[in-house]
Each structure stands twice: as C-alpha cells, then as structure tokens.
Length: 214
Image 1: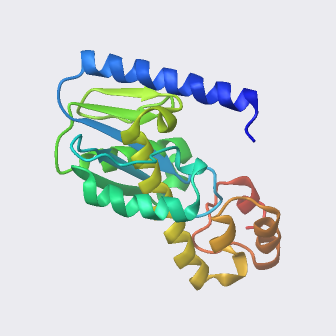
Image 2: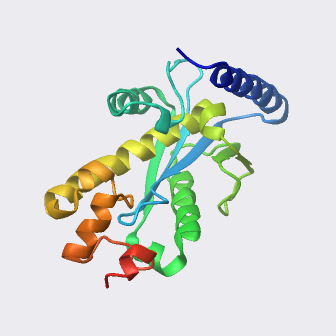
C-alpha cells in the first residue's frame, strides 16, 4: 500500500505535468523533441543520449522515468516507441571522449548528436535536467522532465535500454567484472573486481575508483 507522502508526490507531479503541457501548447508551434541520457554515473562505458519526437496520433501508454520501470517493461516500451514515434535518434559519447572532455561535457555532446540525428527538425527541444547542449534550435531544460514530459520519458527509455544492452555485450567480453548486473555502477562487486583484475579498456580512467587501480 502506497504511503500518503508518495501519493501526494505523484499528484504534485501530475499537476506540474498538466501546467507544463498547457504552457507548451501556448508558446510552441511545431514538433517537440524530448531528450534524455543514461550512463553519467557508471565507472565504465559510453554515455548514451536519445531524442524522440512523438506522434500525437499514436498514444504510448505507460511512459515514465525509465528508472521507475522494470527491465521487461522498458524493453516492451523501447520497441513500441521505435514503432510509433515520428522519429527517434540514439547517440553516444565514448569513454575516450568522457576522459578527455569530462562527463558533463561528454553528456551534452551525446545529447547534441542525438538531436542532430533526428530525421525531422524540431521546433523546440526539451531536455531533462538543468543543463542544455549547444543546439541550432530553441531548447528548454526541465528538471524531472523524464517524469513530466512524455517525449523525454520516451527518450530516457531508449537511452537506458540501449546502454543496458551494451553492458550485456561488454559482460560477455569481460565476464570477470559483472557488467550485466551492475551496469558499470560502482557497486561493491564492481569495486572488488577492479581491485582484483584492474581496469579494462572500457573503464573511465578519470573516475576516481578506476584511477586508483591504474
């Protein structure tokens, strides 16, 4: 049974979402693209970003912050988003770019690549969080956007599923680290594997736990 505090938080989010939709209807004419990323915190692998322009003719039920969904639900929504959206784009910034630029700038780079990869040009881009990449179209940063804007929710799902699948492939290549389970995050298991085996080529060398074992 959900607590009263949890219910109140959900009601407040729903209210914010309605206000935001009303505002966007008034101030934006044309296509809206939602943008989000996955993989800022892990110790290994690229940071992945996605951009999505939804088709108003086709409703996708259950869109939400990807972190609030089960892996099975994310996988099903991933396929539905690709099938029903007007257009989607998934991009990344590599481990080398993360180590060279820093994780924030690499994330913004991946986001810019995702927007530039869209087949259709949006009239406005809505980005989850409080920082914006440099874009050639108007953009707005929205804190908790992955819970408020369906297009951002869709982008968060595409980015999350893409990166999780990449981690499974990496796990097959380097099974000693357990990437399929922790997805590159600094869990106790991952830190122990780093101390035992050292870093692999996909570890981010500028992240402290990795730097410590190099």
